[in-house]
Image (cartoon, rainbow, N blue to C red; front, side):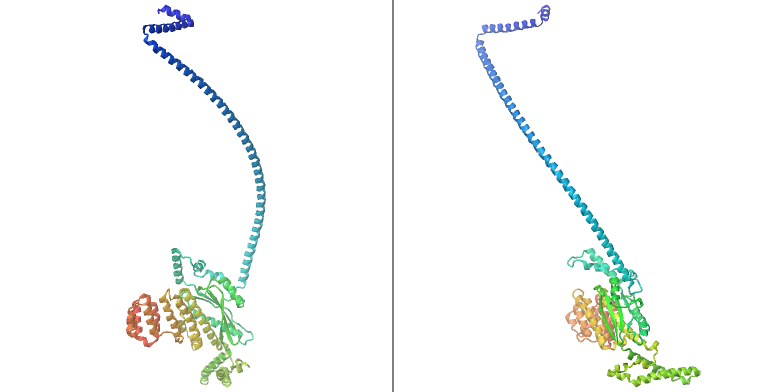
Length: 586
């Protein structure tokens, strides 16, 4: 097309475009008619194609109709579902609102109930707090009252404390406390100790053995009937002399710094406090953890009674034990014999007065003294006091006052009484000290050595009954330990027999049930030493030679005791030398 035509068409607007479209359609149809005329074979395909297109159009139209119907059904179904959903949602919202209202009502009821319960609990708590505060105040008041009462009781007890030394001083001066040793008594017997506890206990025992607890001894003033003629002299001079004698014995044999310490307090008793069970109980109240012995002497004119109060002897118990020991003491007879012996010695001295050149005044005084002494001897011989003693009729002389017939010298004639009292009390103290340290630290008794070293005990050793009683007490103690130690410590158990034998020999008391020295050595060698039975049954000389060669350091302590026995018997002089040489080598 030329530019003019195109311009005209562009200027023609939409009408021109429509005309152009019609022209193109018509051209297309004319072209098809021309093809059908020129190519007739193609007409059939066109027909088939037309039918197919017609069928497809119809199927498309039906499909569209079906789709529209289905869409309409789906739309209607969606509308129904939406309606039902809206109805269900409305119903659920209604139910929710109803549940919310009920829940709110329940919550309000619960809050109201909780508030009431809280108020009730607060009231109860306030009441309980008030009651608890009141009870606490009551308990505090009661505790304060008990503490005040306890303090008053202690202060009151301190007022009647029988010693001049404060109990605080006694307790603070102790070498160590017993709590560490007694703590095991509170443990279960079936509970095993840990390794640390065993090591700690072993260290405490070793420390205790090196520094043992001393036995404290207190003596009360002598109590006696004031009607007795010489009660003042006995309760002062004689008793003071007894104190001094006892103090010397204890210091020499049981020194506080020795292996068996004893603390002796002869003058610690307050003279304003009378002795008796009440005083001992007061001491026990304050000093129950200390090993103590309290002696309370009393004289009734014929017998001298000593009440022994003791606790913690050997640390077996802190219970207060009390016993009484009676010493028959005929003061009239003792003093009469003392006056007689003193007068006879003085007369022998005064027989030489005539040979002395003394002034007449001095001679007159000495002759007067001589007459008094001679009168004492004559009265003693005339009353035949020794015959009355042998016949047991001394009461006849005492009926009219035996001592009133003699001229006494109180500074000399009462001294034997102090010696007798000191001897009896000293033996008892020695036995208690041995018992305490034997049970506490297994320290061997030294009673036999104490008796041998102190001449004061010689009169008692002549009394066979007294020696047998003392030996029996030691045998019961040592044999009891032997039976207890037989399984765990057989060597130490064997030593107990030797210790009991030593004491019996010292007291000249023989027990027929005891083995001889040779039998005991054979028994010990058989049980504790590596000797054949043939060697044990040899002649004693041959056996002893083999035995001495087999002694080790473990057996030394036992054979040291045997050595002391052999030293006292000349029969074993040769054996003593062999054993002594072997023990020196060890």
